[in-house]
Length: 81
Image (tube, rainbow, N blue to C red; front, side, top):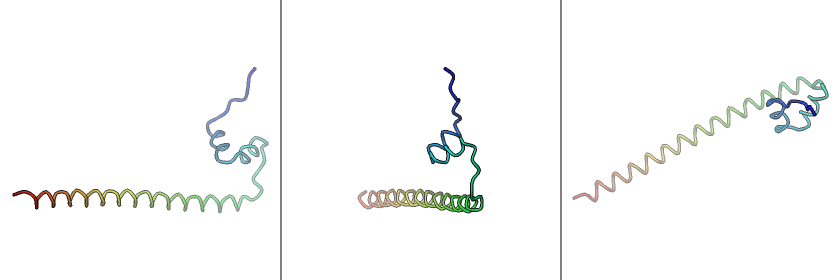
């Protein structure tokens, strides 16, 4: 029995939104392309915000690590005769 080959992009669409995948299988056109465009712009802005947060958290972690190392070195220096 030969079945339909499922492409990775279809799987991604289904995992993101099963209804969108279903509509895609029916060959339906999007009913509000301007809303879709606004949604894509909003999603890009959200993605940029997430990237900024990840970078800031990484920078904060590095700064904290540097502070802990500096404190350890300072305390070691004070304890040495």
